[in-house]
Length: 150
Image (cartoon, rainbow, N blue to C red; front, side, top):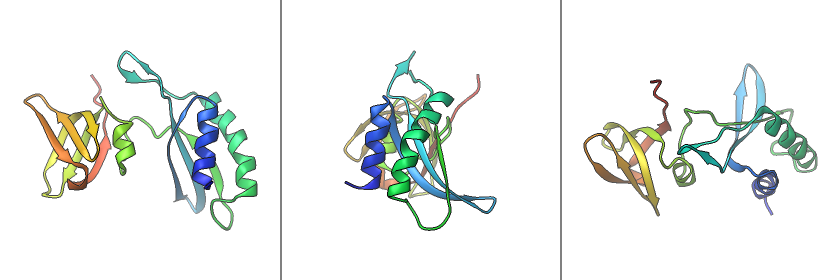
């Protein structure tokens, strides 16, 4: 099993879903970031992740990384939510963002904001105030969820 699969198993064991893992550099520190989301929904929106859940998961993941480090050299483990506005870079990210508002740029450089209503294979179905439309995942250059304050 890979480190990613082991981390995913630990995340599932506490009733959460793994969103992503990444290595980032901030203020001269190397951070191994584990982003998690809740599989539960409330009023049509995905429930948030609590600080206690992040702390508990940090205590579970840390010993695993002592045995199987994700990278060489010094790093800091950070477990948290990817946030309301997060980058979408994989089909799995899109699948976990159904019913959310997405801002994206297509290969033709069109900038679009719409609600993601379905993911079927690499086919993404969106809906804006005018219509429903489909775009292939491979035709999207850059995407992120966005939150509109009302």
